[in-house]
Length: 115
View (tube, rainbow, N blue to C red):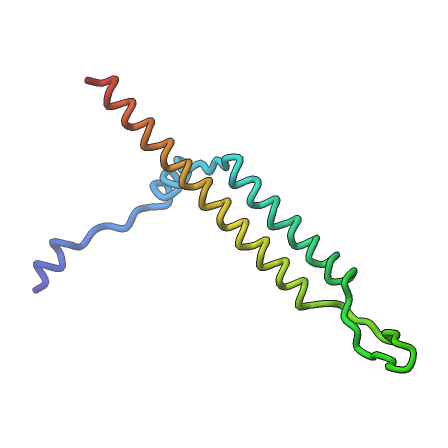
């Protein structure tokens, strides 16, 4: 039993090996991923502005048909935030798919050149 454990037991990597692995990883964002971040940030700001502009009437005077007290529209703000988040996720996913397809294309081109 201990022989099998020793057989599969591997040494843990040291700090330099881990740093070397993470240095090779460089994150480059393509235009779709940058637009996705921009859409989410703008969506948050627009949600706050729309929640304030299209406020909800808390107290209504039926005599004068006038809204007496208005408050912030949290429901509208959350809906705008959700739409911006979903759109941002979809754009980011599209950017990631394009990035992966470009990597596949580069690998296929390298294989064809090596033949």
